[in-house]
Length: 329
Ligand SMILES: [Mn+2]
Image 1 (cartoon, rainbow, N blue to C red):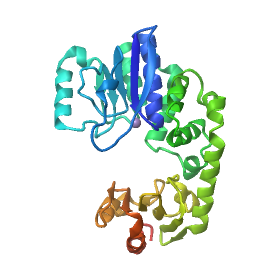
Image 2: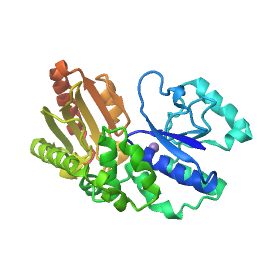
Image 3: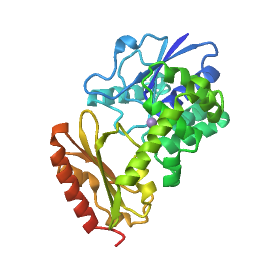
């Protein structure tokens, strides 16, 4: 039997879900299946190429629903799991058919798809989750950003954090498919120690340390709000908890950064703040005023690279507004 597993690409929870599905399927469904892995990414337009659904079983984990009849298993926990009302209707019809409902599962209350899959596999198929408890624990921490402190989020001491850094940065399409089976076969520290994994880490950690030092040199905290401008450095993505690691007393952070295709104003709040949540500013509303968006606690505004002056002006206005509304003042 050929089983094709489609998973959320460049995502720790996506890779863990694919690995956990494999172990569950081998132990509880078919002992001699061959597994193939295929990453999926969010993009405008069609998300799936149905001509790829060529397995005897085709499985989607930690990613949107596909109404294709070739999909035989589905597990997801994202609020936005259905791209269209038709997909949602198709899933509702599936839930009324016992054979279909026994293979396709959705619950947005779970922090990670890995923990959701473990729950279904253990309660409905008698799968033993004890050997993979550590994997489930870390999938919840990483996917839910449930870090105990800014140090845990930025120093990345745990093997799961280092694996996440590698998984989110890889450009090699063969790397994650090679990694997936190992995640439920050995402890995460042993996965990280594999030569094809360990060799990728030093340059990524070096770039991470450079980002910390750059933001340390450029950031200023005043009246509970951090501001930094690193637009003179091309930095494609950096750990968003660095500002609070450097200034743990701050409530908000506004960062100006630049990539090849945009100048970005990142507007965030400290996940570990002692501030009263009811006194905090809704950052999605702030960003929407400038054409951006996000959530109440974190948002962003993107400007085209030639509009850097507008980005700088917007950042200065937002910094002034948040400093005037310091919830810990
Ligand atoms: Mn997930």
